[in-house]
Length: 521
Image (cartoon, rainbow, N blue to C red; front, top):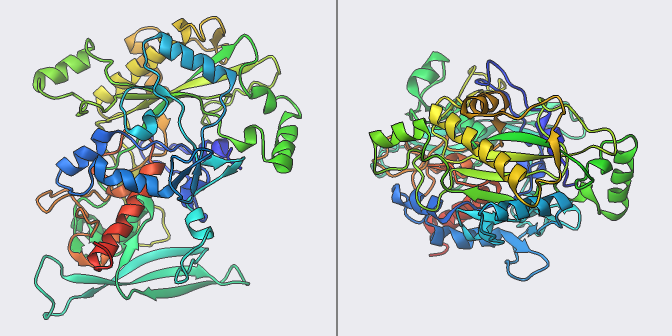
């Protein structure tokens, strides 16, 4: 079933004023792709050209575009490749067509292919990893024609990577250790509850692909990470890599809800008494209806919003030659999308349970955020969850840009020709939308939450980059036969969603491994 969004949002927990948090993780085959928003957005051309300019050859847009395509198969057209990820464009709800018209009325250019072509400004409909009512995910790489030498262990938790000291006969370089095995705990079937410690030895090399939270977590438990932090916890330090777990980046989003005067959304199929039963029955019998697609509407990107704002001017005075957010031409400051029914995080419990109540939300996403967080260990015990400090909105420029983005999209939907005559007011009716910069900033501080795009905690970079954890071939500094291949290696978070880049990074890792073993190239 494609529609898993609410379960994801309502397992999100905030702690300590939004700073130290526990986030849901995809604990099944395919990981988070089994419950994400299904959006296939590659990011901008400039994102990957910037990665290469930061000292990572082979990561430019032209280099990675074939790797994006390799995983995908667009349907029903033949413009994609024969990859395992079936991607389609959903038929839009009436509210989505109306919002699209408002964007265009307010000056956005309609660019239907912008999210696969790497463009940084415009409006269009995005492709999703859903086909004929069924979600397609990372599990499809394994479930369809897997290689004969692939063995998948479920109910298995990695504890650490086993490192061995290199013998003196090894060629001298910066590496003193080689990754030789993985220690893990696996539940024994058919008993299920019996846990066995297993050691999986590697003949060639080990690739960690556990995501921006768990990849640095595994490295640190293996003795690879900030020396002071590991020693404090009593972990034997093998490689002092101070940046492991640092540079945590994420996309923040803010929901703004609107009540409509007429039926233009899918709320009537979900919230009134008995409606959800009929909707689920339809999906079970025919794989059709709202449960077989994801209720997001058109997407837009806006390049420039902030020219006259005091935070923007102050940043420009300090460095007149640079964009204050560090964005390059072709990289947006804001991405917008919208919902085709009511839905959001636990701070939005006001469900429209009457058939005459139709609601939707605009969602404003901050690109190029300045704030950076971290992933640290709470204990030397690998069973204890990590300490995640996203450090959201620590930089006031982030607050100002996100607030202006929210204000602007409010203008689009309340003044644009497609929606202005259909909006009855805010939802819930007791809410009043902010007015003025300070009110919008306060709204952002209260309502901002994660878009579930963590990245950057095992940053990729050249030898001279002291903040890099892996080199441009994804090899961990100071350790032979060990790579990381997931969104944690991003030197800067892409300006889009992270599902498509995560697959691309996996394809790139496979390419590099083949090249380094002289199998291709």
